[in-house]
Amino acid sequence: MLAYEIYLFWFITISIFILIFYNLIAYIFFPFVWIFNQLKIQYHKIFSLNRLKKQVLENKKEIKDIKNIEKNENTSKIKNKLKKITLEIEFAKQKWDIDTLEQKLVEILSYDENNIKFMEMLSNLYINLWKEKKAFSLLKKLIQLDMQNDNAIWNLSKLYLELWEIDTANILIQKTIDINPNNYRYYITYADILYNKWELEQAIQAIQKVLEIKPNNSIYLDALASLYEEIWESQKSRACWLNILDIDPNYEKAKEKLQNI
Image (cartoon, rainbow, N blue to C red; front, side, top):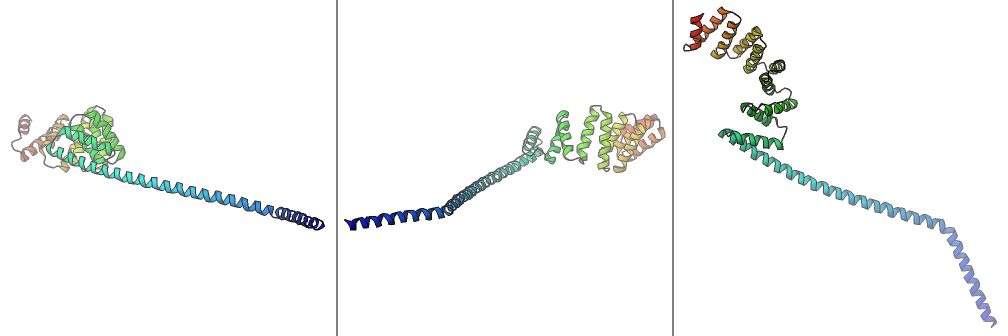
C-alpha cells in the first residue's frame, strides 16, 4: 500500500511539474506565437490580394484584347464599306446619275462626316441642283474644317450674293482671292459683287484682272466693254469691241455696238 502511494505521489508531482512547465513555456512563447499567427494572417491576405489583383489584370487584358479585336474588325468592315461606296460614287458620276450620286455622298459622309473631299463634292452638287439651304450648311462646316479652302469660301460667297447679302459676299470673295489670287473665276464673282454695289470702276479692275489670267477671251472683253459703256467711256468701249472682232469676226454683238458708236 505504501509503494502504491509513493508511485501515486510521484505521478501527481511529475504531472503537476509538467503542467506548470508547459504553462510556463506557453506563457513565455505566447507573444511569439501571436506574432507568428498575425504574420501568417497578413501573408495570406497579401497573397490573396495579389492573386486577386493578378486575376483582375488578366481579365482586363482579356477584355481589352477582345475590344481591340472587335475594334479592328469594325474598322476593317468600315474601310471595306467606304471603298464600296466610293466605287459607287465614281460609277454614279460617270453615268451622271444625280439621285444615286447624292444618295451615296450622303451615305459615305454618315461614316466619315469630316471627309473634305466628299463634302466638297456634295456641296458642289447641291449648288448645281439649286439646293442652296443644304449647300449653305455644308459649306459652313467645310470652312470650319479647312479655313483655307478657297473653293468652299467662293461658293459660300456666291450663295450670300444670291441672298443679296452683298457685304458678306464681298468679305468672303476678298478672302478667297487672298488665298488664291490666280483663279479667274474668283475675279468674275468679285466683279459681279462690285457691280451690285454699283462700284463700277472697281468692277472694271476686277474684269481686267480676269483678262490678265484669261487674255483674248471674247466673253470677258464683252463684259469689260459693257462696263465702260456704263461709265460713259465710249472710246475704251469701242477698243474692246474692236478687239473682240479681231478675235472673233463673227461676234454679232460687237458688230452692232460698233455701228451704233
